[in-house]
Image: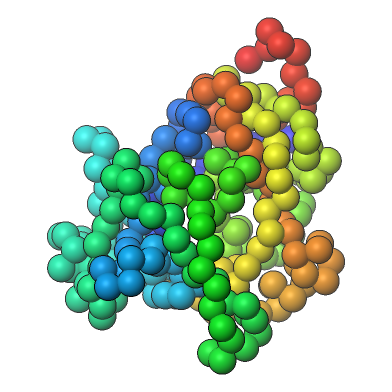
Length: 242
């Protein structure tokens, strides 16, 4: 398998940016999930589970290490007031370096979320990821098939297939070494509308039916490095291999 696409998502649940190469550190791809939008009143981190409109804005990493958020229509969000006006609630943009609580929400019943109870869950420390065992997410073109890859928000899109067989193994990706830890359980996020995509509950239904609710794999970074589009994924590399 080779890297077909690389993606980072600087702000949790916003659209991200496709890159040709990226440094990979302990927290994942450089700039990935380094910010999140928080409800100023509840203290909860907002995701597109609760606020689907987040997927209609985009975020890009800046050369100075900051982030630029582009709202629907093309305007740049200049601070928390602009984000609050857009979302219709008081929100603040927080950095992963700022010590914010990693508390998010998810509906119990994705099929009937309007009447479903919502459960809060604790994300891991560091960058704003949802899963303890995943700082880099990978999925293959064979696995997603005809589905739009944007629904799954993976960092690495691989040509070919067979990534599920990598669970519990070490892989080399460019100069980086990853420990593949977990299958990624999918939630209502994959059904959400995005620019050019309608809401589609069948995506989650099919993943639950055919794949035990999991699609893509999550990895931790055993050795930092750099990865680029076209790099080969090498399973079980020798200790002296990059």
